[in-house]
Image 1 (cartoon, protein in one colour):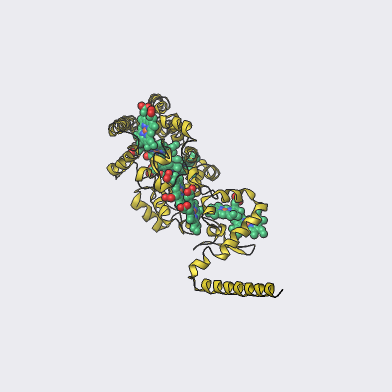
Image 2 (cartoon, rainbow, N blue to C red; image 1 turned 90 degrees about the vertical axis):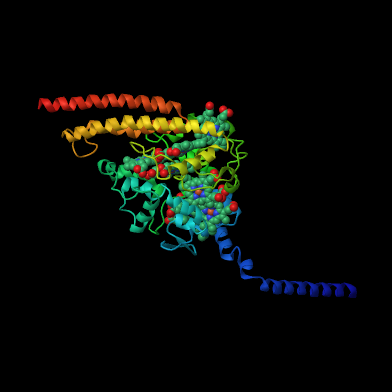
Length: 413
Ligand code: HEC
Ligand code: HEC
Ligand code: HEC
Ligand code: HEC
Ligand code: HEC
Ligand code: HEC
Ligand code: HEC
Ligand code: HEC
């Protein structure tokens, strides 16, 4: 009995001493070590998730699968208000009334800065609504990197089609560059989604294809018919689409997707959120001009190709693309010159999109001219030919016939 009492007593003394020692050691640890991850934040994710599992369970499932959850980024890390945002008192927490790139930028400033320089930012929104929605500083910043892209009037179709059409159509795709009340611009979630925050998703061609499709910019369709797109379908399950961007090699991506050519840091290149950086032509223009940094931009893109192709092959591919741009420019310029002379002869109204010939002239370059050039530069032979050059020919014949008709009608008057 006595021995057993003594051993219990000793055990209690030692146990107490250990706890006290632990408390002393802990109190001397630096604050960051004790508070990281902060107790309030751990509680936040737990509480938000516990309740939201009952309310909106899909969100919690997506969040738990994300790299964010694995790295201890909590619900409140994104939903906490940053400068310029309104607040909501929500179940004992203060959350922001919105989540914008300003929230993401508090941890991903480098990505935001690259994004902000690109045509995905302010230029995308200005393409529809002009410069009015932006502050003078935002216009000046964007114009420094993308001359002429923001300082412009709203698109003529905004007037012709009306606000309901524009917000359900144009604005949905062009929201990639929408301005927010907190002073930030654009959307990170169009490519990464809100709660998945996934690189794997952003590397899928269909993610870019949400917006990059249709007759005026058939990039998804062109990619699907290219050798790259066909091979992507074959290799889909062998590619490591979740690979860490800064360590991406051809062992992860032996076949390129949109992201690989336009954004990835394949084989030690820089990852970029500036999708403009690797482009040499303004292909979307009626008559395509070279971009200000033509040679540098081209060198960057060719460095991507160089991970998988020999230099000679890449150069001859580009030479063919350049020749298609020159030929298309000549065809489009001839048709636009015809429109100019009709205007000078007083046969066209001043307003856009109010005579049938306006539409033929617009489709000619906006659909078929662009498709020809995009097809040539991304490996879509059918788009360069049947959806491109052939239609260009047909529309230019139609345009000439309509011009003759307008002139004849004018003489009869
Ligand atoms: C006790 C339950 C509960 C807790 C805790 C909770 N929420 Fe909610 N939350 C709700 C309910 C209910 C809704 C409304 C859902 C609906 O409209 O279907 C909601 C809606 C939201 C919305 C949408 C608001 C809107 O007006 O569109 C956000 C964002 C949100 N919660 C984030 C959070 C975050 C972040 C936390 C933790 C910091 C959190 N919630 C904690 C119950 C809760
Ligand atoms: C990576 C940042 C991020 C994290 C982490 C995050 N959210 Fe969100 N959440 C967003 C964004 C962005 C939106 C869209 C907000 C907007 O459009 O204003 C959003 C929207 C929501 C909404 C409204 C969605 C809808 O479709 O109606 C709810 C509810 C919500 N979040 C709850 C949560 C909960 C609960 C957690 C944690 C389990 C969480 N969020 C973690 C970024 C995040
Ligand atoms: C509190 C800081 C914080 C906030 C806010 C935050 N992130 Fe993150 N994000 C991280 C951390 C940490 C990682 C993990 C990095 C790693 O795995 O190396 C990460 C990783 C990512 C990744 C890479 C995921 C992958 O699949 O590899 C993406 C994409 C991302 N974040 C997007 C966003 C977006 C979009 C927002 C805003 C809606 C956001 N983040 C808000 C801290 C944050
Ligand atoms: C399906 C998504 C989508 C819709 C809808 C859409 N766009 Fe676009 N738009 C794009 C994409 C993607 C590009 C980039 C094309 C390229 O660079 O080849 C683009 C390019 C443009 C450009 C040329 C680039 C520039 O900055 O000058 C203009 C102008 C434009 N869009 C205006 C509009 C207007 C106006 C509407 C509605 C009447 C509209 N878009 C509807 C996705 C869309
Ligand atoms: C046009 C689509 C798109 C948009 C918009 C976009 N991203 Fe990304 N992001 C990507 C792609 C694609 C990758 C992966 C690149 C690669 O293949 O390595 C990526 C990678 C990332 C990473 C991981 C970077 C690294 O080096 O580990 C982070 C973090 C991230 N994005 C945050 C953001 C934030 C914040 C925004 C908004 C300012 C944003 N992204 C907007 C497509 C996008
Ligand atoms: C939500 C719609 C949307 C998504 C998703 C999207 N884009 Fe875009 N993208 C646009 C619009 C709109 C433009 C035209 C901007 C302008 O010039 O006015 C554009 C322009 C571009 C340009 C031309 C930039 C320039 O300088 O002319 C490239 C390249 C591009 N996007 C690549 C991508 C890639 C790669 C992805 C996927 C990783 C992607 N985009 C996802 C809407 C989108
Ligand atoms: C093999 C590499 C590669 C792939 C894959 C690829 N592109 Fe491209 N893309 C290019 C090249 C090269 C150009 C022309 C570059 C130039 O002007 O110098 C281009 C041009 C563009 C432009 C035209 C910008 C303008 O000036 O009008 C857009 C937008 C674009 N690509 C988006 C996409 C999308 C979306 C996908 C996937 C569906 C994709 N690209 C797949 C290499 C690629
Ligand atoms: C990640 C690797 C990768 C990158 C990057 C890449 N390609 Fe490819 N490309 C391939 C593969 C694989 C094939 C199929 C080759 C075969 O038939 O074995 C291919 C096929 C092609 C073909 C068709 C060849 C034929 O005769 O059928 C062309 C053209 C081409 N690539 C051009 C380019 C250009 C231009 C770039 C850069 C803008 C580029 N590629 C970037 C992997 C890549």
